[in-house]
Length: 102
Image (cartoon, rainbow, N blue to C red; front, side, top):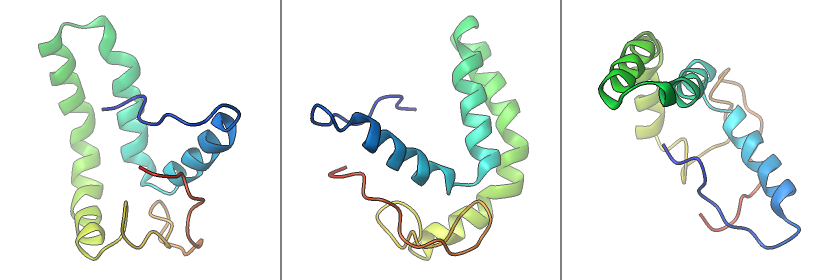
């Protein structure tokens, strides 16, 4: 998981961070929360334990969200596709703010 994946011109960091946060807020929240928890909790464990805990913590999310998410992705939604629907609720919110050359 990349924790830093953009470099922006001086003075644009806050606006770009807010735009990225708004984009991420449209993602399925159970998955986002599981990833966030994993990122915070993994550092105190050896690699094998951290990977096991991530798998256990993410299993329920996979069961609830993976198939529906894969179908949306295959239909062209998500990154670089039609991102006009709020993936966390299924409602339309319009296109996200541009985060620039990804």
